[in-house]
Image (cartoon, rainbow, N blue to C red; front, side, top):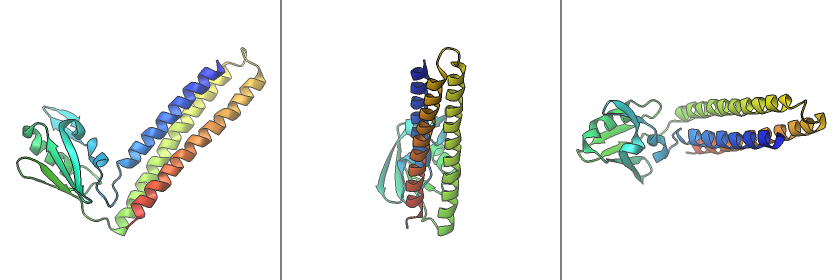
Amino acid sequence: MISDVMTEATEKMAKAVDVAKDDFATVRTGRINAALFQKIPVEYYGSPTPLAQLASLQTPEARTLIVTPYDKSALKEIERAIATFPNLGASPTNDGEIVRVTIPELSAERRKEFVKIVKGKGEDHKVVLRNIRRKAKDDLDALKGEVSDDDIARSDKELDALTKKHVDQIDEALKKKEAELLEV
């Protein structure tokens, strides 16, 4: 029973760290990254569809992305979605076949703004980890009549160590992203 609670908490925390890393990847740096564009919602036949499902994305240069739509009729909508997406500053151009996206150089001030955004996202993901820990702790406390108090206390310590390990992983990913953002 205790092992089930711990296994579930471990799996959820690992998924939360993966989601955090994916979320950090969506914040742009000085180089263009296809991951920034994959989840941009594009109106496609009346429903918002992620860009990655509508087109292939290639980065031939550091600040250029080429978006090749699978369906040429979606070209205008793709261009509009990229142009209006917040915090990107991208300028798309459409030549009838592909959308070429260029991003401007980041100023020092803009880099610091992005660092703040990433730190905020990091805190949000740490809150998710703490919520997972709290639920696991409640589940362990619910086992008090069935399992000895020593086992529950030992599991609480394991849970704290597990939480710290995953928080440290988020902090590490945050440091890497911060260094990447501040790199000129």
